[in-house]
Image (tube, rainbow, N blue to C red; front, top):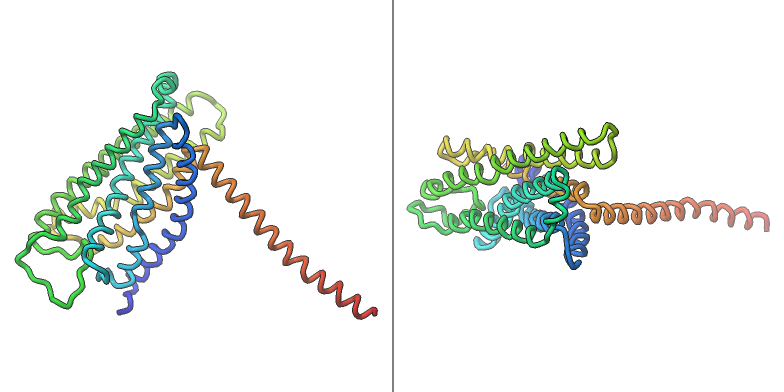
Length: 317
C-alpha cells in the first residue's frame, strides 16, 4: 500500500534529517574519538561524544521504513521493539547530555580557576554513564509493553504499528510512564539548561563591552540548544501530558515524534559551537569540498576553450 500524503511528508522529513545528520555526526564522531584517545581528554569532549552517539542511535533509517509503510511495521516484531528502544533512548539521552554540556560551559565561565583544577575526564565518564543508564532503564518500557499479555486480540493478518497501536491494558502502563518521562527527561532538563545558559550569557556580556567571536559562539550555542528543547522536544513531550489526561495515545503524536528527528540535525551545530576540534574538522572538510568543487568547475570551463582552440587550428590548416 502506498503511503498516505501525511506519511509521505513524514517520510520526506525523516529522509532529509537522515541525509544531513548522518555525515555531520560521523564527522563529529571522528573528531571526538581523536580527542578522547588523548591521555587527558576534557569532560566536555566525553559528553559531546556521547551526544553524537545518541544521535546515531536514533536509527532514522528504520523510521523511514515505518513511514513508507504507513507505520504498519513490515519487519519482525523483535526488530520493531529494538529500533523503538534505540530511537527513544537517543531522544531521552540527548536531553540530559545537553544539561551536562550547559553545566560544563557555565562552570568554565563562572568559576574558571575551579574548573581548570577539577577538569578531570573521570567526571565526564561518570556523567555520561549515569545518563545512559538512566535513559536505557526508563526506555525499556518500549520493549516491555511490546510483550505484555493482553485480553484483546488483533487481527491475525494485520501488521503491528510499532509502539503506537496499544490495547487498553498496555495504555495503563504506557501513559503513566510517559508522564514520568516528560517530567524527568524534559521539564527538569530544560529548566536547568535555561538557567545555566542565561547565567552564561549574562557573565560573558558583563566581562567585556566588545562583542567577540567567543560571544557569538555562545549565543549561537544557546539558540541551537533552545531550538532543540522548544521545537524538537516540546511537542513530543506535550503529547505525553495530553495523552495522560485523555487516557489515549494522541493521533497527532506521529508528527510530534517526527520533530524529534530534527534534533539529529541541530546537534551538529551544538557540537560545532562547543568544540574547537569539531570546528577544525568541519572547516577542513568544507575547504576540501570547496577546493574540489572549484577544481571541477575550472576543468569544465577550460574544456570548451580547448575545444574551440583545436577547431580554429584545424580550420587554419
